[in-house]
Image 1 (tube, helix red, strand yellow):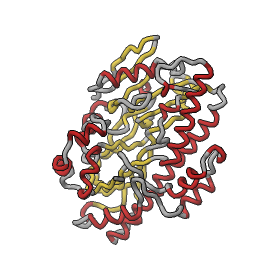
Image 2 (cartoon, rainbow, N blue to C red; image 1 turned 60 degrees about the vertical axis):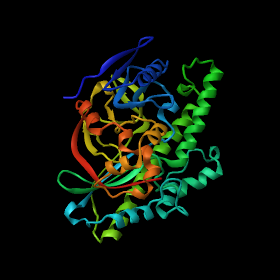
Image 3 (cartoon, rainbow, N blue to C red; image 1 turned 135 degrees about the horizontal axis):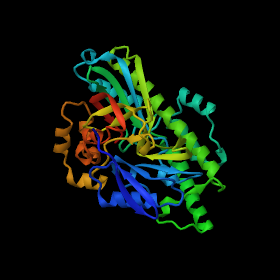
Image 4 (cartoon, helix red, strand yellow; image 1 turned 180 degrees about the vertical axis):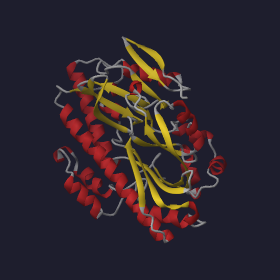
Amino acid sequence: MGTAPVEINAGSDATVLSWVLDADPGTVQQAQRTARSPVVSGPLALMPDAHVGVGSTIGSVIPTEAAIIPAAVGVDLGCGMSAIRTTHTASQLPDDLHSSLDAIANAVPAGFESHDEATPQARDWLRANPLPDKKAVANKAKEKMGIQLGTLGGGNHFIELSLDNDDNVWVVLHSGSRGIGNMLATSHIKTAQKTCKQQGRDLEDNDLAYFTDADDGFAPYVADMLWAQSYAKANRKLMADAVLRALRSATGLAFDEADRVDCHHNYAEKETHHDKTLWITRKGAIRAGPGDRGVIPGSMGDDTYIVTGKGCAASYHSSAHGAGRLMSRRQAKREINVDQLIEDMAGRTWQAGKAERLLDEAPTAYRRIADVMAAQQELVDVDHKLTAVLNYKGC
């Protein structure tokens, strides 16, 4: 069984409930600081993959009542995962997947790349889901949000072709709300900081600036946040559809969809917990209520898990979102070499020619996902363990 959470006193009657097995002092201190915010209503839940983030700890679940902390929700609003089980098994795949990797790369722009123009599907979505306040968005951002809808981005975002224990073939991808989500979030974070300064609110960290529902900035932030979360989900859907089309072209197989799971892991949502209506901010965490399905990836050289939530009340029906970094990107580039990354990626088709540019995403920069899953057995049940045979990242 997984470990029970450790209760950590944060002072001022604030508490952190931690499922982390190896929390470093900086992670704990940052979580304690967030827990002491006057708008946090109840213990902060710290997931097994927690590590230091901007303002608030990545891997934390933050309950607030009639208030929200924009920087805790983060700048990649709605970032999350999709996993699609296809109608094929491993034996049907070609022995060499390099043509499939090339097809995916041609179909889905990554890194700083985007589509030359918005796809018909992107235009349809944007017409059906207009920005809440177009005047608040710069023309350059409005132009980008069309051509970036259906694109991967960089960093830890990825697309994989994976096999479960029954050799079923899955497509797994990780991405969020791209440049428009970042722009909206950054603008509202600055407004929250200005609001707190004007109101004379004491902040232990400027990135813990918040809106109460009485503030003028609250409703516009919530509207933009929810819109960006929907954009992120649409972004993943358009990419997944494009990947399936690319695989059909590269392999000659049908690649029909048998099942699809999608979940945010950087977002906020109004929920009821402990008889209170709260905003639950999951900064690097997924919802794991009874029956909720989720996708929890490891590093680019590790496994991914398809899970069903158990509805643990102490975690606000939440679980970890991934492996969690052990090294900063700078440290990883300094301490990990290309030979080590190539060894860790043995057995996968990947962008080996770009290994030097992927060192900050090397498996040794992350926790082992199996350890994270072992620590949260009271939070989720594992339905499938997926092992990647192909990995594509923006670099």
